[in-house]
Image (cartoon, rainbow, N blue to C red; front, side):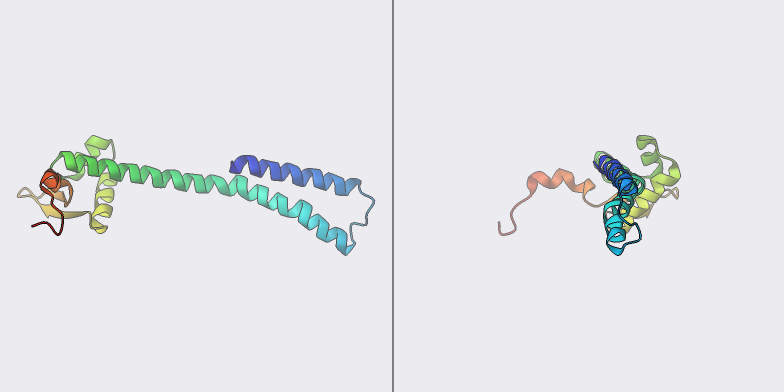
Length: 146
């Protein structure tokens, strides 16, 4: 939508500029300059912004979506693995580099979705609070139930 609107604004600016060129009005008159600014310059700036600025925003949105998808897959994997994962588990399951897997796990840890523990062999294990306790959902009771 933004790309079409940007192209439309640039076409409008070009058509309006052609109209000013073919016009007999004095281009130096204040009213003509204001009209030129409103009908040519502003649409051209808006169109250019939509075309070139929109790509950056789209890339940012795509990166955010990718990161959220990876996090959701990590949480799903944690549920499957009883709430305990290593960076290697995540890297293998999601085809990520070990560094990217560790960075994502660390980000989940800083958001208090996981804790970190060290195994007897010195391996960092990420413990997911909720994922390890999903089996207890069936025994859940209301807060006021006795």
